[in-house]
Structures are given as C-alpha cells and as structure tokens.
Amino acid sequence: MLSPLYSESVIADRVREIAERMNADFKNADIVHVIVTLNGSFMFAADLVRQLRFPIVMHFAGATSYTGVERKQLRINAEALPPSFGNKPVILIEDIVDTGNTIGALRQMIAERFASEIKVAALLRRQSGGGKADYYGFTVPAGLFVVGYGLDLDGRYRELRDIKTVGVTTSTAGDARNLC
Ligand code: IMP
Ligand code: MG
Image (tube, rainbow, N blue to C red; front, side, top):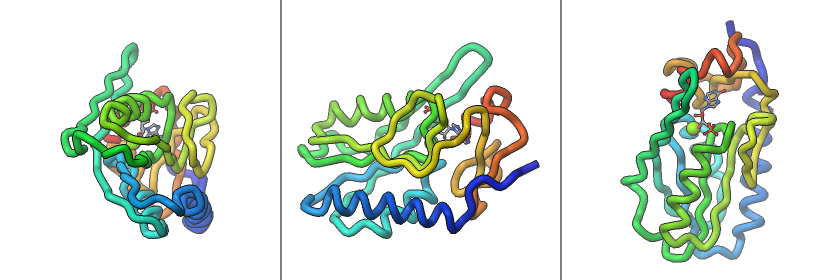
C-alpha cells in the first residue's frame, strides 16, 4: 500500500535548485570529486550531475546499513575510491540521511584521503533523524519509510518516478535497509 509523497515534477524542481546552488558554489572549481552512494542514490545522482556546469570526476561507493532489533551494522565498500583526492573538494551524493551514520563513516574515509572540503547532497533527510546535509531536497516526516526514485523496500520500487510512502513505519521497515 503506497501513498504519494513527492511527485516527479516536484522532485525535478528541487533537483534543479540543488544543481543551481552547487553551480554557484563551485563556479570557480577546476575539478570536483563526486561520490555516489549506491544503490539508493543512482537516480538522484544521474539527474543531478547532468545539470552541473563545473568539471567533475565521479566515483561510486557501496553503503549498506542494516537495522536489527537492537543493533545497527553499517558496511561501506570504499575500495573503488582513490587513495587521494589531491586536495580537491568532494561532494557526497546520498539518497536519504537518517541517523547520519552512513554519511559520517564516509566523511571520515574521505577526510583521510586528502579532500580540501566535503559537502553532502542528500535528496531527503528524515526529520529528527539527526543527520545533516549541506544541500537537501526534502525533509521526510519522522516515522515514514519512503520508496521510489532509487529508494527501495526489499529491492522493490526503485524504478518509480516519484517518491511514495509505504504503509509501515521506519521501526518496522528496518530490515529493508540492508538493500539500500
Ligand atoms: P543513516 O545511515 O541512518 O543516515 O541511514 C541512511 C541509509 O538508510 C540511506 O542511505 C538509505 O539507503 C537507508 N534508508 C533510510 N531510510 C530509508 C527509507 O525511508 N527508504 C529507503 N531507504 C532508507
Ligand atoms: Mg543510501
């Protein structure tokens, strides 16, 4: 049972606004590294990077988080990242920031690899989730689990053009996160 939350056109407007802000912030950059967290960010990243007007190098990092009843495991596959970003800026693209654990772990890895600055672009952030982003599209009300536009529930719904809520709360949908 899915309910509409953000339509395709509303998402497109917000992605354009994020791209415009980035284009202003990085207008003088000679090169910027962009890291896409997989799998959930693939659609947001594809739409965002096509609107950037400064030179980028793209990288992809797998991030898997799992919320059990009493513990949370986070695994990051950063093998594909370069050992050094050569003192250049890094933009991290994330689908949704909840607790901020995923972004926090990646930030630390990037900081150890000589980035001049690290910015986070998240399409969504969960209200009262605690995580922070420098650019974000929407604040998802606490307790809602969302799918579509790259985000999944048990591997389903990534292909949807808009974002919908599933009829479960985040506390009961936690085991879907190992597919993020
Ligand atoms: P964090 O590490 O707690 O910030 O969790 C962020 C990760 O959990 C994201 O990269 C998502 O892949 C996944 N996630 C959190 N909430 C949702 C949701 O509502 N739908 C789909 N994936 C989610
Ligand atoms: Mg993710």
